[in-house]
Structure formats: C-alpha cells, structure tokens
Image 1 (spheres, rainbow, N blue to C red):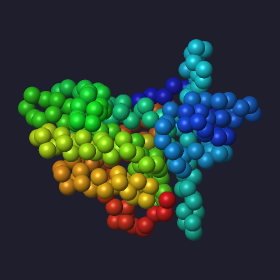
Image 2: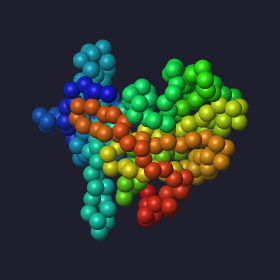
Image 3: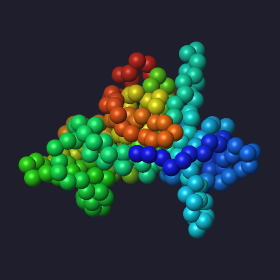
Length: 253
C-alpha cells in the first residue's frame, strides 16, 4: 500500500481522540485529523517526529491526516529503541487483504472470494474479512492493529480497555463452534515489534477471553509490517503468546 506524499512535523499534542496539533517545518502549528480511536499509548509523546498528508480537500474541516510516528522507548540500561508506527487504523484491514491477495499471508490462502464488513453473530458484529471457497468452510477473519511497544520487541494488545475486542472474540468462538474457521489476525504496523501478546495489565478481561478463544479453536496469527515514508506492506510472521511472560523478560507497561 502506497502512501500519499507525506509531510514531516513534530507532535505538540493529541487530544479529543481525533485531533492532533503538529509543529510544521516552517514553525507553525497545524491541527490534523488523528485517525485512531485507541489510547495510542507510547505512540503520542509530545516532541515525536510525525508524518501527515494533505487531502487537498478544502471541504474537510481538517484536510490533513496523521499517518506515521517515530517512537522511542527507553530500555533502561540498554539505551533506547526507535521504531516507525502507523497510527491510521483505517489501514490494517486493507493491508490484510493485500497480503492475502499477494500470497504473503500464507495461512489464509486457498479462498476464491474475499468479502468485507459482513454482518454476523448474535452480538450484531461485522467481520472484517470473510473468506470463501467452494471446497472448504468459510473463514471469518477479525483484524486488530498492534502499536503498543513495551520493549525488547514486545507489542501488546489492546492499548486500552476494549469491550469491543472481547465481543469479537466471543463471536469468533461461536463461529468455530458452528463449524467454520475463526481467525484473529494481529496486524502490527510498528517496526520495533517482533512478538505479540495480550495486555493483561491493561485489560484482563480481554486476555482471559483470548485464552478461552484459543482453547475453543480460534486461530491467532500476527504479521509485522515493513514501513517506509513511501509505503507500508505486511511481510513477516511474528511470534505470538497468550502470556507475555514467556518472552525473554517481563515487560512493564
């Protein structure tokens, strides 16, 4: 997926969920649209380098959109680690579809049809991607974006309490019990993340529901993105564990 031409700035603050003030290269202050409903923990530090783009649409109240941030995480005695993170939560579903169609996402190959935002489930959800083929059961794919890096290559989800995330896990469990394939796909648009786990300390209910989903047969897949100032693509399978403590050291959030 190619980006529109990106413009560099410095983050002054993110506020009201969908707004951010950015210092431009000329030293001015520009209010941009922030396309992210999460807490953006560790991705919205004032002073961070950010990149945004101009829609050129004068009818938009805020014609500029925040796309990338350079994150820096203090590793204590190990110094610091930097990474590029994609903060636009409209991107992961498109990235997942591109990776399926290109053959990169090997675990989801063999389907002839990809449908988006199909209504399903007792809790009135919409599945991100529904994969179909004549010779196999339907595959329901729920896509989640992971941008909370906590050190040593570990990324956690969610970055704030997510009742919606737990709801989607329950829906996937019901899908599996009905004889279909249920997949939770963590898309990781953060170059410093190599391993993914649930954020137990942030949302213990989500973590517990995820364990139930795994026991029920829901598959969990994590893929990392290659990010430049020109494009973003999913490229590599990442390690996943339902308990962050299995990784080399316990991370504090």
